[in-house]
Image 1: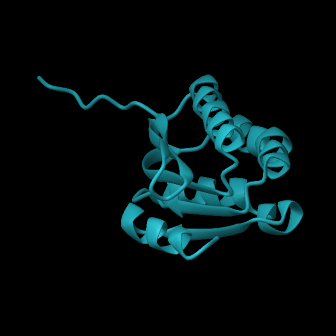
Image 2 (image 1 turned 45 degrees about the vertical axis):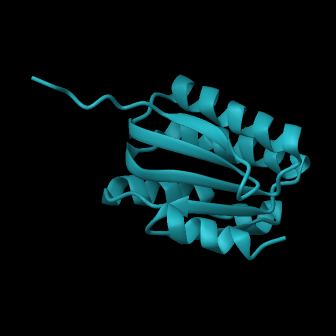
Image 3 (image 1 turned 90 degrees about the vertical axis):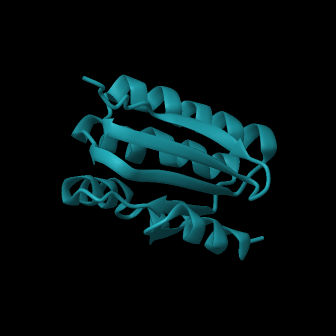
Length: 131
């Protein structure tokens, strides 16, 4: 029996000039933090103002991870210059709700424009309109 491997990862999208994170399945907090920190490294190294998180295959975002994002990740991303954040939202209602909960208030508190999309293509199109 073949099982689907669920790996979270990230990369530097030079064409769109953004960091892209992929989160799959029920991501353990420590694994999420590893990928999130790599995304911060990409943003800082390249002075990117844009990021995409594809959470369309993510099951749920743990409360510990949601708190980490609000208390640590978003403040660091703001200091590094992140301004535009696109999310490709989960097909799973719980994943979508936990993503929205983690982002609640981040737009105002950290002066970021956050938008939600159904595909990575439309997320990239939106980011390409941002300088």
